[in-house]
Each structure stands twice: as C-alpha cells, then as structure tokens.
Image (cartoon, rainbow, N blue to C red; front, side):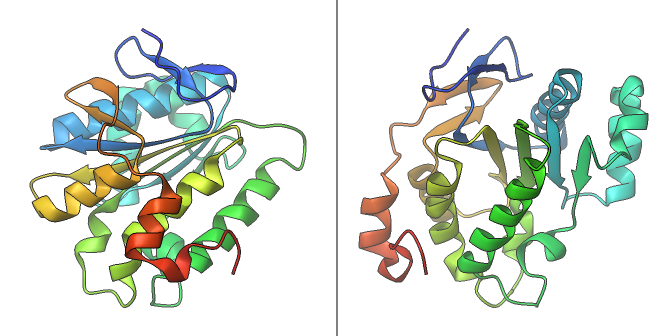
Amino acid sequence: MHIKTSDQEKLVLGIGNYTCNWGVHICGLYENDKERDEIIFGFLNQGLKAGDLQFYCPVERTIDEFYHDFGNECPECKNKMHNPDHFVISSAKALYYPDGTFDPWHMDDALGDFFVESQKDGKRNVRATAEMAWALEAIPGVEHLMAYEARLNYFILDKPWISICMYNVNKFSGATIMNVLRTHPYTISGGVITQNPYFIHPDKWLAENAPQYLTKNK
C-alpha cells in the first residue's frame, strides 16, 4: 500500500507492505520492545537492502545490545552494520546533547553537516531513526524538544531523507504524546502508517508554542 508523503521518489518502508516517499517525518508509537523492534528492524533491514545510509540512535538498549539483537534478526546485515558507509549509530548524548544541553539550533547544524557529508559523493538516500526515551531525563534544554520536532519538518523537506522518531507511549505522558502528534505529519502504530490528523504545520505550531524557533535560520 502506498502512502503519498511528498512528491519525491517512492521507497519501500520495510514495515508491513507500505511504501511512501522520501522527505517525510514520522512518529513511531509503541508499547513494548516487540512493537519497537518490528518498526526499527524492518525499517533498517530494508534500508540496508536498498543501499541507503542508515542513521540510528538506540536508547532503550546499548549499542552493543542493538548489534546483537539486529544481527540475530538480520544475519546478512552483520558486516554492513559496522561499515560507516552503510550504517552510522550514535548514542543519544553524542547526537542530541554533546555539550550537556539540548539545543534545537545545534540540531539544525549537526543534521545539516551530516546530510552534506552524506551527499559528498553524490545523491544518497538517508534513513534516520531514534528512540526518544533520552528526553525523559532531566537534561537542560529538553523542554525545547517539540520545537526541534516541529523544525525537523523544515529540515527534511525536499531531501532524500526519512526520519522515524520512536516514542514509547507507556513512558511518555499523554500530553507529550499529543505534542508528538502535533509535530509529526505521519504516524506508525500497530504496524499501520497513517496521515496524522492532529498534525499542525510547523509555522503555526512554532508561532503559538515556541516563537523564538520560528525563523528558518538563527
């Protein structure tokens, strides 16, 4: 089943029989490890088969545990998992708050630099996914997480990039999950991808909730 998410090329999502288009920001909602792994493993496995660049941030398990679990799920992926030309894996701290503070402007710069580097040898499709449970910690600046999520829609637009932000609905409050829905145009839940009726365009969401992050640039 194809879900038209942009005017870019089509990709096989790796979840169920869904296809969508590059340039999309999705929230993955799950209640347990099995549901989490069905999304992440299917998404990354398909990306490796397609030759896409994988960018993944595990939180609910260690990086070594991920290598073990994903290697068992996809034995043919083991060699590529350790090849940075195919797979980049990052801790939450290194990605989201390397200096100890979470800052949406830093994320703009870091993801922009990553994308430029990924394209230096020609166009490359990028699949990014991250477990967001790190945001439950008392990290300075984490209150701006949803501003980052809203701004991520600007970053992804027109790029050969797809992001799935993974939220455990048993760990995050209902209010937070509602803001997750307001900042992601598509959702995956229970193995089903849908256009999200709660999504608010980032221009509007930021103007109402975080106007200091509304401008496209600093």
